[in-house]
Length: 192
Image (cartoon, rainbow, N blue to C red; front, side, top):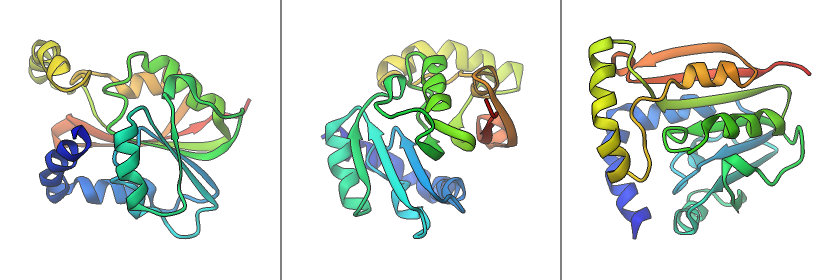
């Protein structure tokens, strides 16, 4: 039932540009792709047809069941981004859309992504983030405890950009959206 509610809540955001942002996130990906926190699979239909393989993970079996309907041929795996069940350098791209706000240990999750991403591979993220505006950031800090409780662990005030840099990625593209409340990031796994 939660998956159905999630889809209903996401529908208005799709009309307000989230669907287009997800399409930009997956545009031009190729090779072996891992989507972390796929949820109900809202981004899956937007992947290009030439992708060699798409593996999508989530911790919610009900959400994965709905994701299965969105794009045939995707390998769906019940897994947590903090403990990925894949070998080192298994993927060319890792996609994350509105996920890291609710990851308990984002540094650990990003370390796992770094491990499974091939040298030179890309991490692409769409996340709501801590505002660059001090006034809005303070409001996010005040709202986060209640919001986190109501929204399944979602935190409004994560500094995702800094977390990605600290995890050993080089950010090559960053676009702030909604006056800095969200951003699109592309980061490359530095060789090594």
